[in-house]
Length: 72
Image (cartoon, rainbow, N blue to C red; front, side, top):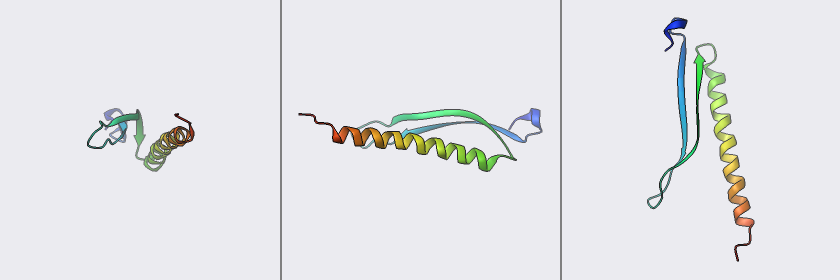
């Protein structure tokens, strides 16, 4: 909590990882930091989930492109 705002804000950080299986390590996807106050909790959560969704979509596109490539 941020004592300068009467404890009404939280400074946070987040990290998104792609979970590896038993043969591979977890992979870093993205991360960041932010400040969220009690008046903005819902919008902070929506922004985090939107960011995650965008990152997942980039991975889906990369996988789709790799599957369409000819590796012969």
